[in-house]
Image (cartoon, rainbow over all chains, first blue to last red):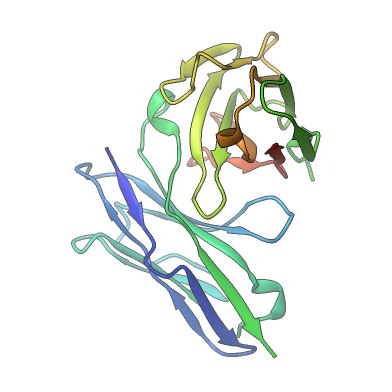
Length: 117
Length: 115
């Protein structure tokens, strides 16, 4: 079974600064997908960024980028130019490449990000 | 923009009572998921539907939990009887076979408190 570990329960960053959230995972599969989800207080979880394991190039979405190290099974999220609206719980998640029963997401325990003025 | 709808948003119930949650996925999404998120933890899958069929309920406590998606559209998750340990956020998500890689869209969740 796959596992996802987020070792930073809480992080804080100054507005306009850069912060990196860590995630490691364990799997025996060679192909898979990795995601970062954002869960603002009392609001639904939304997808921030995704990475296909077969792609060597790190994914980027505006101020959000990942550092995907497949051999190390590491998948960190970098948020540049942090904004107050970035304050939320961030979850790293793993998904097998198959449909059906293997399509569920396996989540880490989350990192609470605080953005300071 | 289409969203996953859930109701109620908040529910307080007493131990041993029955409780039900409702989810309406994004129109056209064939796959529907129910996740449970205990405070301080990440969501964990309870049950997954493909149209009206259950494809994974291995983590669903079947002695007290039940889920249905009768017409392959909206879904209901029921707990009877509720226990103190059931206090959690219950998230519904949906996805489509089309589009890569079957991104899951989440609803706002139902926060259950069992007293």
